Image 1: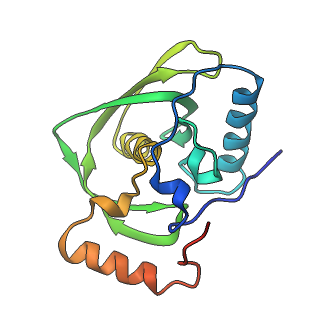
Image 2 (image 1 turned 60 degrees about the vertical axis):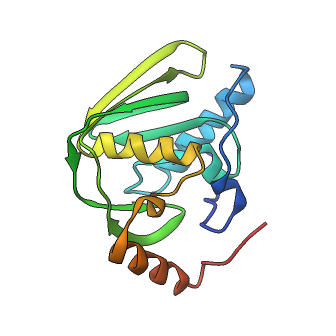
Length: 167
């Protein structure tokens, strides 16, 4: 079991768009295994994107609402209906802020063997799918916050001992 360290906000890899996967080989399967080990290695985790462990590949794993899996090269569509709720991120540890998201989401992509797949969900699963897809585009959930909530989030991040730029 390989639990990889999670990169924190300030790390440049979290802000770059991940590279599409072009080769579905043993290296990709090992990455998916490491991502799943990292996800399941600590309780309460709903997803991990490849860039969160320092790999610029368009891959994420998820475990939410009784569904567990992975998606390679995801594309997402979301509903216009919104949900409210607090959201957090492994790359911004122990901080949660109200973050509007679409109520329903569908992700299409591929499995680790290159077979097409589709994952659809509502509520928390939809939130997780959106959150992880955003990671692969170089976005963190705090980027979508507005107004006073955004100011509070940025202030809270700056006040943490782990918030420092890394290379």
